[in-house]
Length: 94
Image 1 (cartoon, helix red, strand yellow):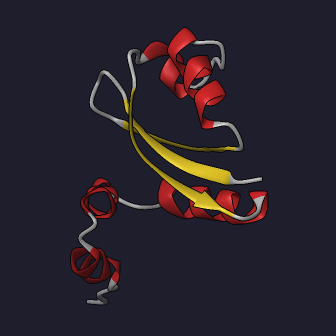
Image 2 (cartoon, rainbow, N blue to C red; image 1 turned 180 degrees about the vertical axis):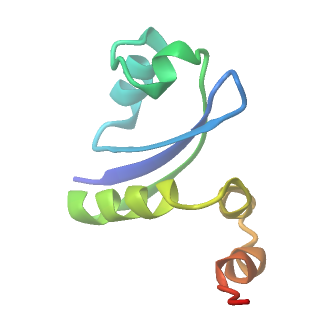
């Protein structure tokens, strides 16, 4: 069984990150506002990217990591721009 992390764009332009083991069912839930979560007041939503994992724990860890990222990092991930993602991940201390 595969587990997925997914990224949605909401109608207000914001992003939503989640994880599931059934992407089709989860998208139907988001579109119908059945989840009563962040997306239910920001419909419609558009699925931008999914990534599969072997375990729920891996998918959950990836979801938590993505939720902590800035918008720019999420957009670099979406674009597959891993050099930019690495650059944005570097911490600078002043």
